[in-house]
Length: 491
Image (cartoon, rainbow, N blue to C red; front, side):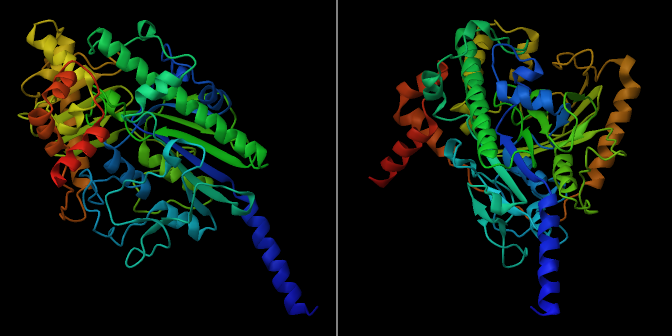
């Protein structure tokens, strides 16, 4: 064997060994979940696998998304940059528009560093392949941002030969869906509605308690899926070199949650388990943005954070975030403009369209929020408390200010309290400055038409008995009804 060939083989061996030094990274992304886990203190739910992750890893208590709706939130995390800057702030929009050339999806950076990027997993509901970002993309394939828009290399399976690999696995069970009742019926220990503890802004009603219990059933279901993923890592002999990250993509799909800038819409679980990298049993209270999670993944992979990213690695010794800046814009047919900043103590919300009520009767949500229907009826009957009635007012306050330490449920708006005028002015100024810093790179706006609008009108007109069930708090099955609607249009 000649010297040139030996040198080449030696170089390839070094490259291979260096690649193996890089950790595998699994990003578990649960849909529509607030801090509703046993390890965060949520009563009535059992999450042993996530408990173990928290006990042996690092639990973050103050992590916030930059948008409370799935596609803008996911867009910001896929690029590590606030969704406003990349013009991805409007739900299900710009799917035909390439990402500005100054930005890249973080999976492209991982692949450049030798990672195999995997989407989904064979062991979870619907295989966990959801991407849902607001710029032109394809699930599998190469990326150059001009003619090639692939985000991942393969689907569903991580193998030893893929090392180092990054796997994004979607846990869909906690998203509102027609499977909620089935999951509950198949559970060997369904959550007792009488055991759940709900926030003060929710009415105590049997339908609402059952709906909350069903939500917790989904969380227990996905906790079991996480157990299956850990077992697969052990069975394949790759557990010790694999970092597992668990987050939500936005808050729970309920009142004040998904779609809103109150705490249940923005605050998400964030747990990092790393047997080789981190000491376990840590709880961090510092403020973290969801874009920081992206930067942290790159940091684990030994990749320097690009200058364009608004996220920073959370385990860097100099990490320090004072605020998370959040925005709410288009969601289906409701064109909103709300901005907020959250610190470790304060939340400020600016409603630029106060004439649009929080309960905007958005068509898709009519199918999936029993609590809204029940509480509308209770409002008509004069049976809501002030805390519960806030969400159902005819308009929103122009500004909201909450002390999160004294008022974690954000029930007491201090914006008009003279005692807190200086805090209000400071938060207002900070928000305006962040508006400017996050000005969109373009104004292209190509939204997808929200089909739920037509389906809801059809149900009201053609299926009045089903519509009455909705008003009574029954989830009638949006996808089933949509199928019936489409068939009716073909006749």
